[in-house]
Image (cartoon, rainbow, N blue to C red; front, side, top):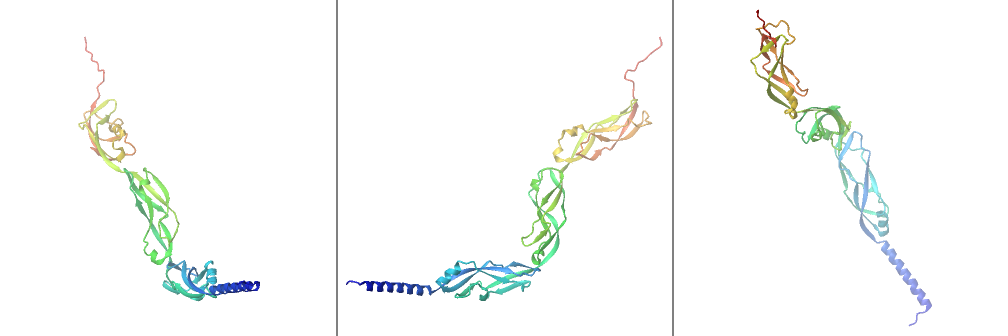
Length: 317
């Protein structure tokens, strides 16, 4: 059967009309989809702090034509929640469909979550003392003599329930980083929870480190110093000395230089064949050593007249 030109034109027009009808019907068909809608909060009272429940978005199930659905999914959607009416404690906020930016030809089927639960607390300001939080151990031979902070206290601003649990503010100190005995200061950051504001944010930790002290006892032979015309004798053959010193110096060569002196060289009115109680005086004691005990502290020196070294005799012939 031969198709005339007129019939071909009619068939083409019919095809175009059928295709257009299909697009119209298909475009008007309603479908469901989920859309993320962002949440912005405003109006929090200045005396309150929201500690829990703040969300970034809600999931909204909407129904609409394909064209309309395609249009909204390509947009950045958000709505605002005004918190000026919240109070201390738990606050339940119901999400009203009317505040969502999904009006017009769209039908809102579901909102997840449908409520926002916020926990609010009162903002307070307190003063707290600084304390050290030690990490590691001091090197051998060192001891922490004192540690103080400047300032001694800090100001905290934050939720009341959190501040109630903070009795003091810890400052971390790494002890194994301290190397030698000295006095020095370092800057450190006190540790507080993220919801708490601290002033000042940095403090000075002031250290005094000393060497670990140890007592050492040993004996030395006493040395007598007399006027040139006299000599002295003693029965005490040795003097026991006890020193306190840094442990690292307990075998130092300087200890062998220490002398125990019985000094009568400047004393007047010394008479031969008499005894004089004389204080034991230590010399050449290193500056890093402290005298703990001298035993005995006094020694009796028996005084005699010194004989000439080259004494000569003469007799009558």
